[in-house]
Length: 79
Length: 190
Image 1: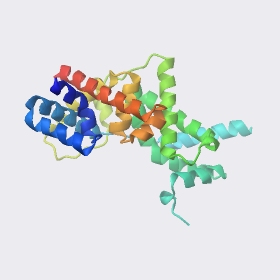
Image 2 (image 1 turned 90 degrees about the vertical axis):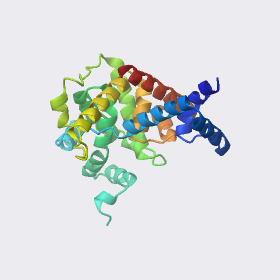
Image 3 (image 1 turned 60 degrees about the vertical axis):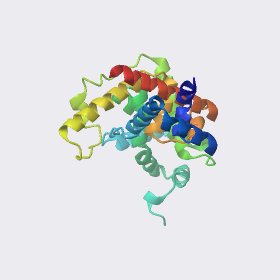
Image 4 (image 1 turned 90 degrees about the horizontal axis):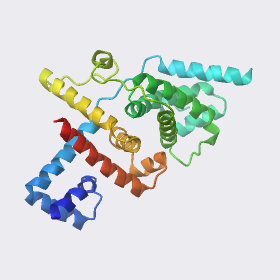
């Protein structure tokens, strides 16, 4: 029962979204419970992976293309 | 006079509003990469992400007088991009890129990674990234948006709330749930 509750609280725990006392209580449980610790580590790993995903590059001509469209739009509105 | 690259977003907006239209290219330069990396995982199609990104800049430009400089410019532009992406998704059937089939093509679009990894490690990393992208793609639109904004764009909860027009508490609850769902999906892959 405690484990179920702890697992529910893990996302907030990872983001340090608790008071010092609450945080310490969950940390104590994680030190003692192998299953919850595994769950915690898996969640941390997922976040690390998400946050190191490579970014897509922008086509070289993108900026010029946007500026050309803006000019066309302006010409259309003026004309 | 301040060098262009050191101008704040708000200073650039002011210049554009005063008639220096070319300065808008500075904003395009600053936000193009961020926006494409917001739109691509949402739309799951690179070409559509590029087209929509262009539309975002056109909309930003033509609505610049509505921008309230009390708010961060980045929040405003992300909000516009987010709304356009949702409209786009509502309108039609998404043309989803097959992540597996686009390997070679995809290479040129992705940033060159560090060479610290061995070929085996690079391959494993690539497979894992594909699995994560596929798992993100299978989430509902809001969960997808939140995961992308938080973990790929490192936005604060307050900013995410403004971008998605939801209360901060709802954003937190939804993203916590989305993360759990993502974990479950990735568990199934293994």
